[in-house]
Structure formats: C-alpha cells, structure tokens
Amino acid sequence: MRKNIVAGNWKMNKTLQEGLNLATELNAALADTKLNCDVVIGTPFIHLASVAASIDTKVIGVAAQNCADKESGAYTGEISAAMVKSTGADYVILGHSERREYYGETSEKLNSKVALALANGLIPIYCCGEALEVRNADEQNAYVKNQLEETVFNLSTDDFSKIVIAYEPIWAIGTGVTASTEQAQEMLAFIRGLIAYQFGKDMAENTSILYGGSCNAKNAAELFAQPDIDGGLIGGASLKVADFKAIIDAF
Ligand code: PGA
Image (tube, helix red, strand yellow):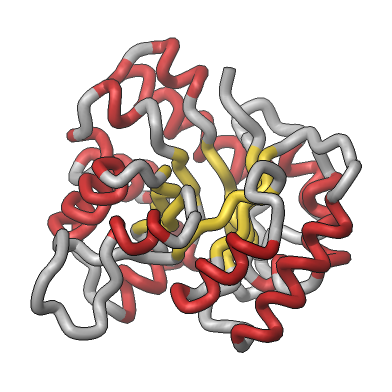
C-alpha cells in the first residue's frame, strides 16, 4: 500500500535557531495526534543534525534538499549522501526544478545522486515537472515522461520501489498559481500509468506520488482527495507551523 506523505521543503529559509524552533513547534503540534500521512521536513544541510536530534523522527522524517553526485573526496563545499544519512535524516529531495535550473543539475548528475542516496539508505523524493512554455505547448506529458525515462526509470525494480515521486509544475512553484485539481490529478495518473508500463501494476499502485506547487491549507484537501495524489511537497506553506499542520490535517 502506498503511503500518504506531506513533505515540507524549507528551501534557503530559516537560520539554525529559527529552524530548530519551527521543527520543535511542529513536533509539539503533532505529538499525540493521529496522523493519516507521513510527515517530512526538508531543511537546509546545516540544520539536519540538530533538527533530527530535537524531534521525534518516528513522527517527523527529516530530509536534505540535495546531496552530492560524488561519493567523497576533493569536492569543496559539497555534502555527500553518507553525510546526510549520518545526521539522522532519512530522505533527500532530488531533482527539484530550482536545482535543475539554477545549479545545472542534469539527468546524468541526478542519476548519480539518486544512486548514492539509495546506496546510503536515504529515500529520494524525486522531483519532475515542466515549465510554463512546455505546458502552453501542451507538451507536458512527453516532457515529464522524458525526465523520468532519463533517470529513475533506469533503476532496478528493487531500487525504484524505495523512491517517492513529486510532480511540481514550475509555473506553480512559489507563484500562488496552483495547478487545478484536474491538471494535478491528470498528470499524476499519467505518471502512475508510466510506472505501470515500466515496472508493472503493483509497483504503480505502491508508489507514492506527490503534487507540489503553491499547495496550501485552502487547496490541500481537494488535491489530496484525488485518487492519484498521495500528498504534497510544500514550500512556502511549510514555513509556518499552523499552515503546515493544516495541510497535514487535510488527510
Ligand atoms: P511552493 O514550493 O509550495 O512554495 O510553491 C513547492 C516546492 O518548490 O517544493
């Protein structure tokens, strides 16, 4: 059975102290609550160890927002998957459009990152999604299919069974423009169909596929009610406990 997941992506926000406050407040807000989804927070690298140590990681999983495409060595400023894992984090967001767009992350690099994440016991939350020009040309399906075929569709069945997919149309990220429920459901159903074709129906049924892009307390319930939407990757609305909790409660 696939899991429902609400994952926060803090991006480059919050100092260490602010991040610790946010994480511990969320932890307190979720304590003794019956949750209908897994909850994950994606913090900056330097927050990971302190956040993981100050919350109940059985209730809130911790994610990095990236990891290196190399195992170890002379790569100044990089953080390896093994280092991420050693902080107590269990997830890593990979292939976010901001990483692809601003930091030149190619499918080739992402293949190394996904492989290293898996080899180190991290669960990749693998992002895909098209830009506005692609959507306007009605080429989003082919675009997303290609993104998946160049990367995670090359994984073994065993490895693919460990990953989470997040569809985030770039035109909806941080813009306040959410994909309509129909657009999100249609794309996630399409992705599930691709997984079925590639890995079989059981794998498709068991893969968690998230929607991301201006998901908030107001639209989460309608999005999560769709048959193929298994949760959300939440940017802006994950930075305030009340907003993020309302999204978690939408399940
Ligand atoms: P947003 O970001 O919720 O602020 O649109 C989502 C994301 O980029 O993961």
